[in-house]
Length: 106
Image (cartoon, rainbow, N blue to C red; front, side, top):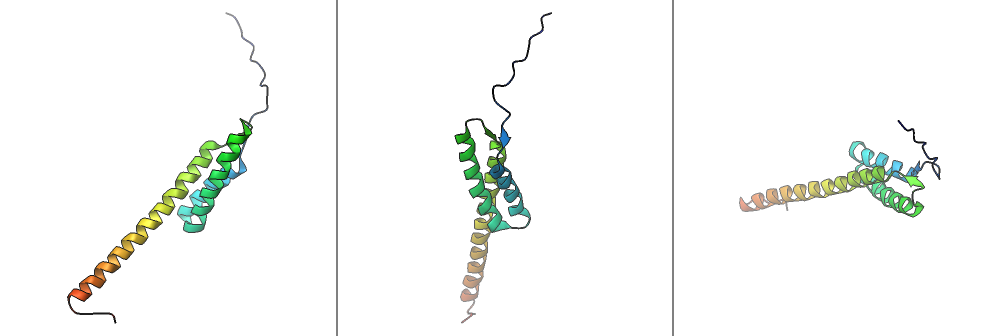
């Protein structure tokens, strides 16, 4: 049985991007406490983190964290838009029903 020596790494281990961590934290916060501000911050930090990670050529890690923050941020924005659409459709339906039966708010 032959033992193989493990070659020492030619560069230190990649550190995790702070912006990637912030993106994930804001993405989680957007679902728990800060729906609009948290999702916008998650999206901005996530895109900036991915750019920094790409430009570091292996010097920075955390791309998965940045992607997770982006997904959470974009999903929160989408759910807010859907909720607004549903609320407006519901209120429009009530207004149409009131107009149909002859009652009006004016």
